Amino acid sequence: MLRHGQSFDPELDDQGCVLYPGGQEPMELGLLFRPYAFMEAGDEVADADGATWRFAHPWSWRSPQGQSGVPVWPLALRTRGGRRVEGEPVVSATVGGSHEGEEDTWRGLTGAEPVAP
Image (cartoon, helix red, strand yellow):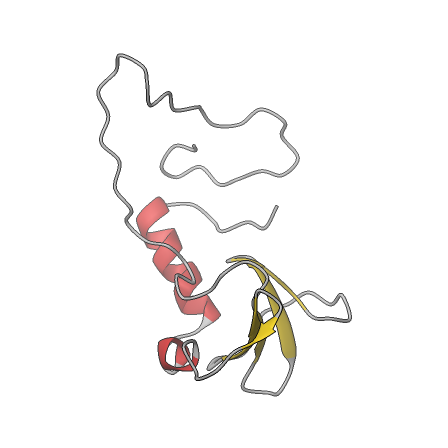
């Protein structure tokens, strides 16, 4: 876990602190925001420009050709768990907004920059 305002640094081996849920210190945890809550790792989408992208985690998108970048919203889910998807569970979540909007919400809540490991 990182402190508020601290961005992840993929170059550091030891960063942040560890929570011990079974420890003596009282703690309360609550989810404030989950970027791309409508996506699952490994989902494949088509973006508004017709490009195909694979979702690894919120700040890591890859094209099948290995290119990095970000998809243009809205997104249409093609596969989930390696299977074709019926319906459009992702389109309705991405009609409004953008990848940049997800990043901005993250920045506002964490005081940190979103960094892909």
